[in-house]
Image (tube, rainbow, N blue to C red; front, top):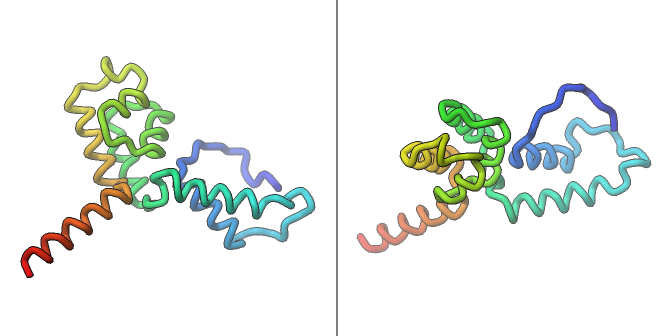
Length: 143
């Protein structure tokens, strides 16, 4: 594997999942060499893990970008933003675990705003399924 650029950055799980899907589809790849014999297996297993165990499977590139922009006013570190994007917390306790010294740095209103920003830009698959079920129940109730 060649290093195409020496620049480095932290990737969120969604970006890793997208990259692995591209590798699996063979886009932009040269023929695997003898040092990449297990690449297909590792790629497949990592994709399966990310799709089943992490909320990133339901994210979109636009949602992740919008969430990063919306997180800017909260003066969080890059690592804290990355954790919030990857884990997509749904309670104040989860935010306290991810943001260092959150009690001093964030008010309760800001924590609620953070939760709202994440719910708006990065909906969980469970949230989407619940909304669909509620819509079905209301339409059945009207019939």
